[in-house]
Image (cartoon, helix red, strand yellow):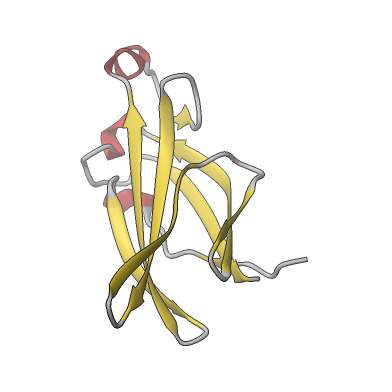
Length: 119
């Protein structure tokens, strides 16, 4: 069983967002963005539970190496799935995004929780 460290995702910073993280002597760049169709946004009356039809969260993880960045993962995320990204394992149990956090900042109740561990 993997022990997960909580990723420093701050939904109030909005999406897309990016951050760097160093684990086991290696540095990684994490980028998250939400892809939501316009018709989903027009019908939204609160938080969007992702993934949904025509709405999902995408994660890209790049490992920083002397020769440049190496992409180790680019995926649409699904709760309950453990993703392998090189020597990392990732999980995202909660993905609820308020439409106002799409390309916008503010505390609107969005919740995106992700964890990372070493394989």
